[in-house]
Length: 526
Image 1 (cartoon, rainbow, N blue to C red):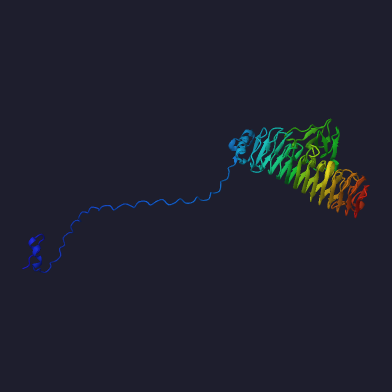
Image 2: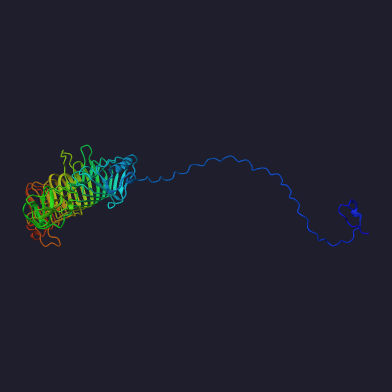
C-alpha cells in the first residue's frame, strides 16, 4: 500500500526513506506563491585610504610678453576736436600724464583748437601722433608762441598736421630744443610763421614733411647756442612751396611797387616786406598794399587802385636755414619751390667760432625762388650732387658771399635759367665745380651774367668738365661767358675740360680768364 506524503507529518519525515514510494503523480498547476521580503543590506565596507603627502612644487615658467602700453587719447581727457572748442587744457592734461609715463599722446581724427602754447613734452620716448595729416590737425589760434615744443630725448611727432587759424607773426609749429635722436615723420605744416625748429639738438631725423603758405621766414630752421651746438640732422622727402597764383615770367618781374602804374595780369612786385602778384590787371593805387593780417591771406585778393593783388610770401622766407652752432646737415630728395631763398647758411651769432658747417645735399631741387637758390653767406662746407638749382627770378643759382669760408663741392647738378649767374663765387676758397650743366643763365639781362663767375681775389678753385653752353631744347642763350674770372689777384685755380661751344653757346664765349695769378691751369676748354 502506498501512503501519501503529507507535509509536516513527523512520522513520515522520520521514516520516509523506509517507506516504499509509488509512481509519481502529475505535477500540480497551482499558482506561484508571493515573493518573499528582500533581506536587509550588509554593513558598509571601510572608506578610501588616507591622502598621500604633497609632491614638490615645480619650477616657475618663463614670464610672458608685456602687453602694449595704452595710448593717451586726448578725447579721453576732454578734447573735442570740432575746430571751435578750446582743447588746450585737455591736451595739456594728456601731455602731463605722458611726461610721467612716457606714453603716446594720440589725436584721433579731428581739428583741435589750441589758444596758447602747449605744455613742453619733456619725457624721453614720448610720441605724439594722429591718424595722418589729412585727418588729425592741431590748429593754433594765437599769433605768436610755439604750438608744440619737445625737449625729451627720442621723442617723436608723426602722422599729424599743424594748421594755425590765426595769422602767425612768430613762433614755431614744432620746436625740438635740447633733444637727442628725435623724429618728425609725415607732418604737414601750413600758415605757420616758422615750421620746424631744431635747436641745440643732435641726431634728429625728419622725413615726409610739407611746408606750404608760410607767413614767416623759415620752413625749417637748424641752429644751436654757445652752450649747446647741434650735430647730425638728417632730412629727406621734403616739399616746400608758397605757390604763385599763376605762372611768372621774366617780363612779369616789376621790382618795387610803383604807384599809379599800369600792371598786367600776373605781374609781381615787392611792397612792405612782401612779394605780391597781380590777380586783376589795372592801375595801382597811390600807396602800396599793407602787409597781410588775415588768417586766409593767401586766398584773399586785395583791391589796390583798379588792380587786385595777392600776397605770396615775406621777402625773408627761406625754406631751409642753417644758422650759428649748427653742424652736419644731410638732405635727400628735397623740393624747395617758390620761396624767396631756397637754402641759406648764415651766422647770426657771429662770434668768430659760431659759424655753421657741413651741409650735404643729394637730389636737391630748388626752383623758382624769387631771389637766390642757395645763399652761402657764412660758414663752411657745402656739397650738392645730382641736384637741380634753377629759374631764380632776380638772383643767382648759388651765391658764395660775405663771410663764406669755403670748402664747397657742386657736381652732377643742373644749374640753368637763373636770373643772374649760375654760380657766383665771391668769397671763400676750395670751391670745386665739376660735371654740371651751367647753361642759359643771365635770364634777367642778356650778356651780363655768366655760368660761373669767380670774383677778384678768389683762389684755390677747380672748374672742370662742365657743360656751359646750350642744352636741349634751347636754341639761344643770354649767358655772357660760360666761365668768367674777374680781373684781380685770383691764383691757384684750374679751369679745364669745359664745353661751351664758344660764342654759339654763350654770348661772348666759353671762358674768359682775367686773373693775374701765375699758379693756374686754364686748358682744354672749347
